[in-house]
Amino acid sequence: MVRQVLFGQEAHAALLRGVDSVADVVRGTLGPRGRWVVMNDEKDHHPILVNDGVTIAKGLDHPDRLYNLGAQILKQASARTNEVAGDGTTTSTVLAQAMVHEGFKLVAAGAEPMALKRGMEKALEAARAQFKRMAKPLETDEEVGFIASLAANDASLGQLIMECVKKVGRDGGIAIEDSNTGSDSFEFTEGMQLGTGSGWISPYFVTDRERLECVIEKCYILITNRRISVVGDLIPTLDKLLQVSKNLLIVCDGLDGEALNTLVVNRIKGNLNVCVVKMPGASERQKSRLEDLAIVTGGRLFTSETGRSLSHVSVQDLGRAQKALVTKDQTTIFQGLGSKEAVEERLNRLKHLVPLANDAIDSLGLKERIAKLSGGIAVLRVGAPTEAALREKKLRVEDALNATRAAIDDGIVPGGGLSYIKAAFAVDRVPAEGDEALGVQIVRKALERPLWQIAENAGLNGNVIVQMVRELAGPVGFDARTQDFVNVYEAGILDPLKVVRSALENAVSVAATLLTAVGAVSIIPGTERMDEEDTDYESPFKKAMGIK
Image (cartoon, rainbow, N blue to C red):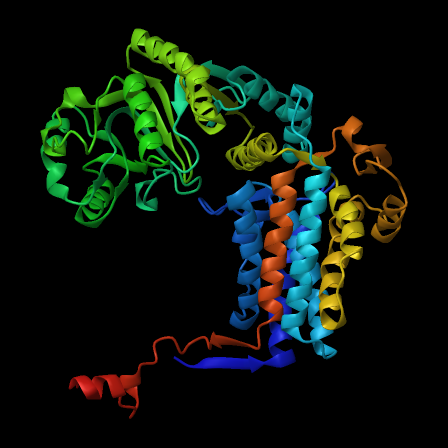
């Protein structure tokens, strides 16, 4: 293969073209008056309307491979923000684009890239500190509704999510399913979630590639705190299971080697409808949660301490549930078939242990387990007139749920770009000199960009709106929906702290990466199959090894 190499400003120009090819499409969707993007659905290639930043970014690739380098790096900002916070992907893209544009201008004028990076990192720390000062806990059901409505860009969906949270509690599980009636609704059912980090071990286990999730109906559940590597430990159990079912969920400490390969192959061939998840948590905490799962599902926990081989597991030792839903980060068990009396006994025991806990951390862990055992699952059913509209709506519901969970975890800050405006004042006070001071200003200018873009998408002059908001005191910001200046707390224009912080952190990281690049290298199309054996070139490695 032959590679094209660019250096300096030529490389920066190519990378910038790639950045803009993604950001210019994504940024038009920001805010309540953001517009939609028409793109082909990955599943059936039918046209769909989307305004979810990370989904749009995933579907964008520049045909020029050099430009595409910049596009792919920018997409990392939205992808990382989505992984950490589940929302804020468009904001992260807007921030990163602004920083890259300003940074490349400064580098072209002679600024030292590493000094710019140091200044950007100083500005980031100042902004983080300001976010923390502004943050407050999510206290009321109304605030939950505000957060969900803003993220979903739909007040009725926001209220439905609020009702779900109210029903199952803030630590309870919420699952999203398709509605059979075409309308939105939710119902409460028995079940539990294993916790963040309990997702599938391999993507080869997914049954829905679009949503990256695995659904197993009427499943049997093998529960162990062991790490499984040897397939021989599983084969006797699988042989027994296949006489009654091929639906199996394995919850363990990990799976690798031949055991993983064998299960994946059988999953792909259709011999087994299987998924493997890792139960999160340290040793004792993990074991306790596995015991809870065993009681809920009527199964038996096989521990490394007992010394009993997994090859001795019988079908009667397996837990059972009506359904298991496994995503990248979470496993939800619906209607476990364990004894209600055993679950109630377990709950009473845990409640008795709470006042006896050694410290606040142990007490919190016990309370979380009680919530998972008693809280149940809210099934949020989403409906739409067409399949394409349903997919788009479910993306917004997922964003809203993620934003709500993020707000519950870390609290809330003023929304609508106001937190970034307030952070810009803090960044103005960062002490720095020379090119580091210029790096500080890269971030400081970018902090105004989300509000600017929200205003522009509402058909207004972004520069005017930014300046007016900067002159206002207190929590007064711009409401793009009513095109008025309001107290954001009273108007419900709130953002999760985790989302605001993650969007800026990932934007700074991606922008700094691009600014410090000295060149860009890509493969020239049509040369991928060119092989060294097609030339007179003799590989030193092959020569040394005696390979012809």
